[in-house]
Image (cartoon, rainbow, N blue to C red; front, side):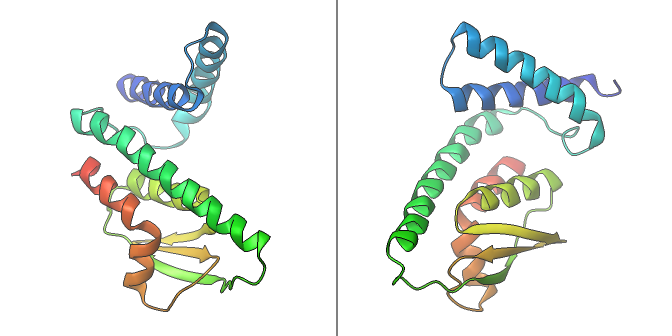
Length: 165
């Protein structure tokens, strides 16, 4: 393994994510989670240089939980929005693909942004080209790229910029 330090950081990030998602320190969860994250790390770490530049800094430790809280809030709001559109078909939908500009330069930050958008109901990242993400949106409100960027990725990108600085 060329980059052992990067591998260890990758395992730590996976472990923190597992702990935050399970919310449990039970013996079974720790055993299954530990086995799973080491297996995932061994299988996938060598396929990408994306995680090799990842460094654990105090800023990341501070902003990671904040990012997760913002993501969870956006996830809940989007779930209620999509559910209300399903329950009440009279609510308007205007599906379409919008271009969202990002000022993020780091490939890992763009990946996190694209995945956060995709995991939020009502939006799906279709493609990423340079500094533009193409998003399928359940209710396109206009053709202005700046407004779409603010609406879809603004909250996520604000925190990601702080982490990457």
